[in-house]
Image 1 (cartoon, one colour):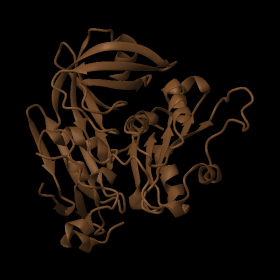
Image 2 (cartoon, chains in turn cyan, purple; image 1 turned 90 degrees about the horizontal axis):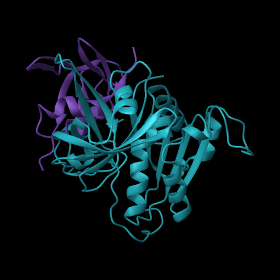
Image 3 (cartoon, chains in turn yellow, blue; image 1 turned 135 degrees about the vertical axis):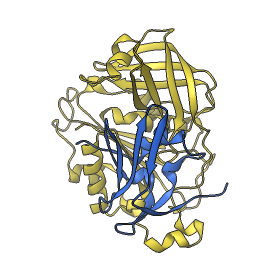
Length: 274
Length: 85
């Protein structure tokens, strides 16, 4: 953590090394048209939206969806964006919370052609942007990127992995994805394709409830030693992005710090839950 | 009470600030820690939102919204760093 005096010093010293100044598009309220819906997992849907006036978004940003009942009651929830770039097309993948106010509607009720009120793009902290580097800098100057996903927390990290591939960025990327069963993997085909297409992207899956047949390890929550084995070592100074439930994120982040990772190099996004 | 983090403040505060405030460094009155608001802990209820320091749990800020008005308090923040673009 920075010390208290840093606010009074030069801005470049006070800034986190991992946080270059970014000019993300300005947020606003927009009307989104649902252009495609399909089942992503047994409990989640993938929604493709065409958002009127959307200025584009960086990988890792989110948006808020506001639903308004006939009596004027409103409910607003945040959802990570699975896509990035200048397009007005925005992809969401929404997990249904059984007693939720918004997600059951988005997962089970929304149909192609429906209109949604969205606010975004939001958040400039949990963001990764390619720097256009198409060849590796001299050893030690490129900071590799470690992504750690718990369940539906993979959504913004998938956007980062996809942006990395789309830019032909050669920064080493590694994703550790903890998921209940093989059926619960979001963007399964896309992630496998990204891993197969590039040596610069590596995918490691951990199954907590049920594994595919022939999987080398039994199902179970990721533990500290397994985490240490599956992430880029602290000595390589990776930038780390962790997204998942609050409990998952805080456990993983505390282990990463115990393993020697710099707290300022770990960016986290918690979506609540257990 | 389950909590979120300061990333979730981006939407609620976008209506009141001309820049994304979640990347702003804020200094905690309680412990002096300086970090981005995105790293703070956020507790929400129907009454409003409480933002707490991730180092010492001191209340940094509160947000209460009702109809067309909002009350934003930074009771626990001694300074923020704003970048001129």
